[in-house]
Length: 368
Ligand code: GDD
Ligand code: MG
Image (cartoon, rainbow, N blue to C red; front, side):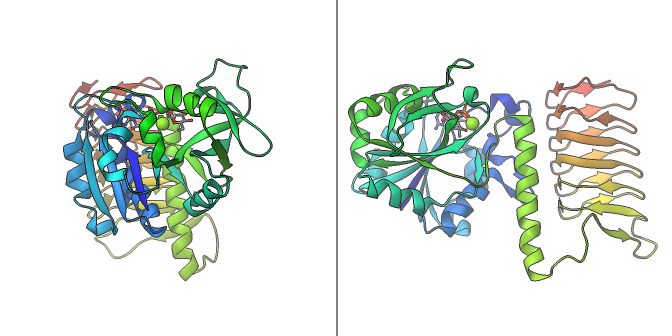
């Protein structure tokens, strides 16, 4: 089976981290969003992946190459100009014609969706398009469907004004499309699948919905990205638990290993610590923390619900929570970042600085 993954967005809601990389390369534990997605597809027998790329394709190619390491063949379909969420599908038609049907995935979703189930459902209904759906409390920032009790989608409304949504079932960013859908997407211009293609198909064709009930997170905002980090870390911790069941929850170890190691470091699961990362005495790390490679952390620092990229230097007695620190950034002693501040690659936060809630510190800048 073949899947097109849409990875051409600018990730504006995750700036400044996405000035230097597409959001698909944001770390999640020891993986990245795109490697996590492709890994799940590979587990479910997908072998051909078309990456619809436009923004910073060089960085994606560097990490993913031809996909061999992940057990798939990756084809890059490059857009000179952003073609939206349907235009890239038409542009990639050479890979898709002759397949009968194929998957399309938004490239920013962490989920444990069963792709086989949606395919079976799609074929059973002889649908032209099938959309994975997810139930949420507030559908207004998503695509929302009007659906019959048999599962046929009568209308698709992208980001409806508050209180006008026809249901709480939203587009989960995963579709099975019949090859004939390619003929309904104009070639060579920007086309939105949500605003043009789906409304057209609902009117003229057979569009069905399939409700996913497991894990589902759109990682597009700082808080949802941190939520995805938490879930991916928890899932990988559970896997190792399967091999050696934990005897207790909460603090997993207090370390004191010889005079050269740090004393009294408290680790709270789940967390991931990259290679060559050094943690000072009396620190508390976790839960829900990704620490990249070559990070140094001064004594007495506490970090939870956070992602720290590679090569970051963090001072003493720092408190980090609900925050993301870009590659090579420096965080001075006693700094507190606890309210969704995002620090760009290579930025420096000097000791004594007060960083307002939600602040975005641009890459390479000094904040005093
Ligand atoms: N190749 C390419 N070209 N990809 C694009 C482009 C483009 O011009 N624009 C956006 N994308 C990619 C993004 O990288 C992302 O992976 C995906 O398309 C969806 O774009 P978002 O910008 O994340 O859209 P959204 O989150 O506001 O809404 C979409 O996702 C929701 C579920 O998370 C819509 O599909 C909604 O209907 C849906 O409910
Ligand atoms: Mg999104």
